[in-house]
Amino acid sequence: MALRNVDAVLEAIVRRARKLLDTDTAYLALYDPERGHAYVRETNGSVSAEFQHLLMPLGAGLGGLVVQTASPLLQQ
Image 1: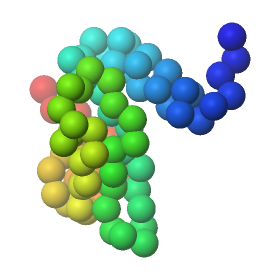
Image 2 (image 1 turned 90 degrees about the horizontal axis):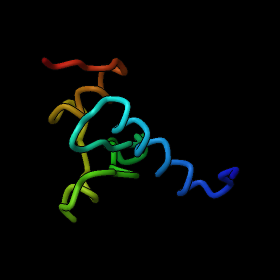
Image 3 (image 1 turned 90 degrees about the vertical axis):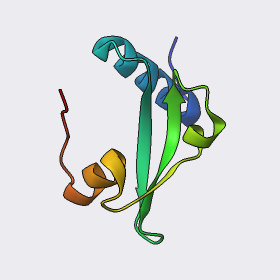
Image 4 (image 1 turned 135 degrees about the horizontal axis):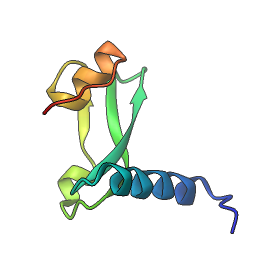
């Protein structure tokens, strides 16, 4: 089945990433340059409503650091 709906495609990407990485939670955040922060667009595995609507200012937290540096971050 081909996915044509943007929301369904993003949901499938995040779900697959979570499965591939074998993590409890996965999310996809998008950067809004006009507002200067990233926001969570899609989650999988999160049950917290607050997390599902999280805003990440540049440099704040792991997500904000990734946005600020435009580089992936791996913590072990």
